[in-house]
Image (cartoon, rainbow, N blue to C red; front, side, top):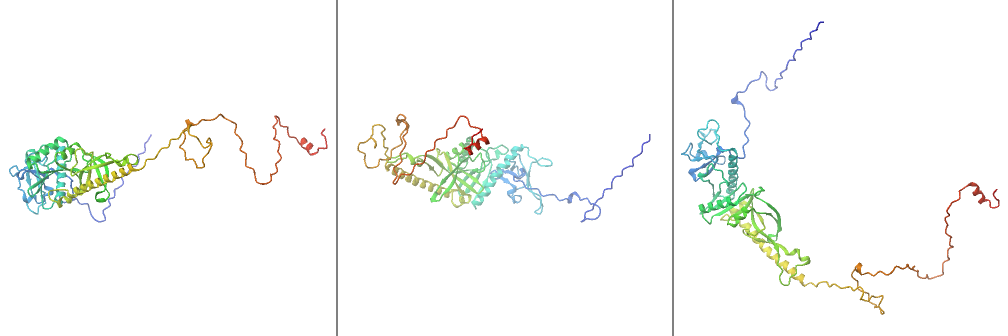
Length: 452
């Protein structure tokens, strides 16, 4: 048995199509000439861009927001002047050698070969970056609203490397006065708020204004309670309502100012106290006036402890710079107008309650069932129509024994009587019906013949 060898299959030659733009063989591009796609800037600064300057009262440095830092700050170790915000170790500040150099200024840890890395845990570094970015964003907004003022962000050098529950506070210097502004990012507890309040009073004085800016878009810091319709200065408007947290109530109770911020809008709170008007002499709040007795009162310029909810007055952040002392004066004017409208609303409703009390009450007429004489049984019926009676209850009706109904005779007609129609005897149905046949039909047609 012989096997026939199959012909060998030759591979199809691959055709290289040269680019129409370039002719000739392909050329390799050296690594130094390769173009890299630009790196998308991160929203958060790098840890190499953040540091605590112990030589400047613990000022927070963000190189991404200070383009002239390379010309102002001393370079190198600077005697341990710069500290890492996350791990607390000393840093080295490096900058470009020449003004034309593309080297980016940065902080690095000493003795770290290759890529500089912080030894702090990654979640701790992320919290530091987020906290400082949130506070520095608020500082830029306040700087636009308060031109010419000095706004500093400082941290205690001994706290470098520790995990803080609150980010450092902003300090606004207006002449001899100082305003401390807090910007918490995580849920605030009463213990943390009290610790910070004592620190601020011990550092800046008992009468220092202390503001707390909470995030309007954070559901843990802003607990919505609906809205309330108001008419300040006679203009209808709608204010949002919020249910304050225990820590926020404690802040207001201890003399701090609380507000919420949404971009460049600040929400200033006032207290809302729902209740019912107590009835005075000569007032009647029953019936249709019952709903008018329910209303609410305002407590301002700061909410009282007994407020069930807080109403919020929206205010542009720029208005803080129009008045001295960092006071939201336009919001306080709106609250004063709300109190004036509240007093006018109460006076108007009490006047309606007095008018309601003076209206005659509808008299109820008692209807007698058996003892009162009726028109039919009276021997001398009156010619006046009887008043409408109230509906009689079914239990008061005395039904007579059943009698045969009497036919109603029609009235006599004016004219000769009509002929009466012949009465047709009713058809009596028999028990059995005769069967139809043709013979029976013919017999009916021929009455003279008899059937066989």
